[in-house]
Length: 277
Image 1 (cartoon, rainbow, N blue to C red):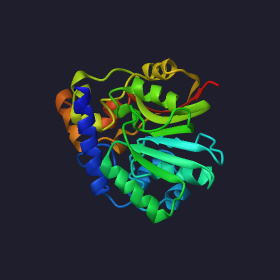
Image 2 (cartoon, one colour):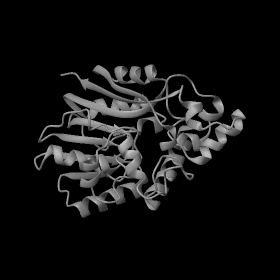
Image 3 (spheres, rainbow, N blue to C red):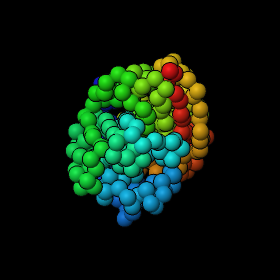
């Protein structure tokens, strides 16, 4: 797919998610999505506590992530935190408590519907230190050297220009600033029919790249002290639509569950890195 086509299909899919309040990356029905409490089950499985889910406004947790980027990072009071692909605001609201009234959290998302939803959630929750801006993570609407910490949750894999994402992250961070990213990466290449399928792309599969290549992009952007803090086989059923499963099964002529098919290829990782002083 062309880069313009990728952005269009991702934007359209997440606009639907925002409007429907459904969970998971895929546009079709998903095993867990649509069921009462599905987003809480997914969030619990990827590292969020019950307390985390209870403290945010209803409708901000859509079950869209692949990890909890806040859990493994230390956020100080007064810091400025930037969330890449902030969705309905879940991680931003969790970070808000950590930075306190003297700090600030900025969420950036390219989907107008998600930004509106996040702003409504912020108003409902009375968050004074959280701001949402519409924009692309490859071209951040953020000043140079202005951010202490960047977080992101299962979003960079959706970008067709991952190198630009990390270069932009480096640009907006203060010297000594840091990133903490949860994302989907690969242990080995996927078949072409999966990589070229739109449904599999918005299901957070097709856009993923080999783990070592992902880490190399972070290094090339200028980051130091790059660490994989956690690495697990990701339960594909939490992010993959039934449409994507059917496409893969039909092409591979098998009837096994998709998580069995892809468990040797797909990982969820948490990566930290620092911009040098």
